[in-house]
Image 1 (tube, rainbow, N blue to C red):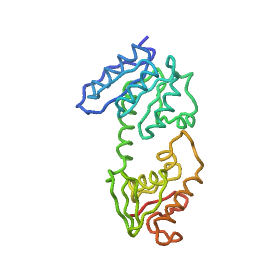
Image 2 (cartoon, rainbow, N blue to C red):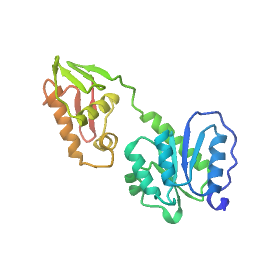
Image 3 (spheres, one colour):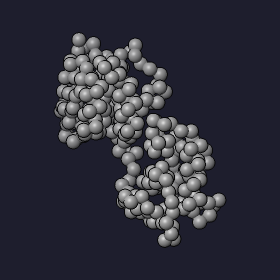
Image 4 (cartoon, rainbow, N blue to C red):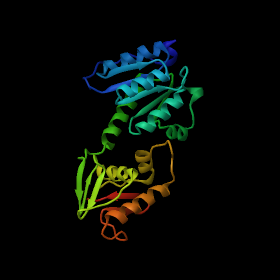
Length: 245
């Protein structure tokens, strides 16, 4: 039974990582194999046997990466993937599936998955994909931003959701605050409309890219001295937008 899903699980022990992996898989043999695989490499491993249990464990303590089987009893793996990716878009989700279950990769990405591995799978391949996902997340992680931030003549307190320009209060919607904070966190980096949609809006009420353009326009009108010639919220043609403090 185990050999049909995992092609051998003997790995050399590696240094401790402190990273936590949540495995949502109902096959007990595969559970044991994945626990041995990841713990031998220094990861902390938590295992859920169904989708509802996995969601509860995720909400209690979000992991560094999640390995998710598509064929789960009760709540389907696709629904688990969609719900978790909506709440935490940056969490790497690696799908496990039988070859007959492999969906179109575009659909997997729409669900929020970052990668998938088909059964039977090589432990080394899965481990490599987990590490790659973690590296990508670390590289993409935005710099920490203080809750109080200033640029130009703008002063913003994200905790109080208050913003002033030249000392005068400016009315901002909650979504405008979210867009502003994400752009500040990624200052100097070109952000595509799709990335802004994914990271700020998520997938629950998926808007059009025009929604991003409208929000950037309003930020320019409220926060730039000359909205027609912006200094802070710049357009990078054919790529997206960039925030420059």
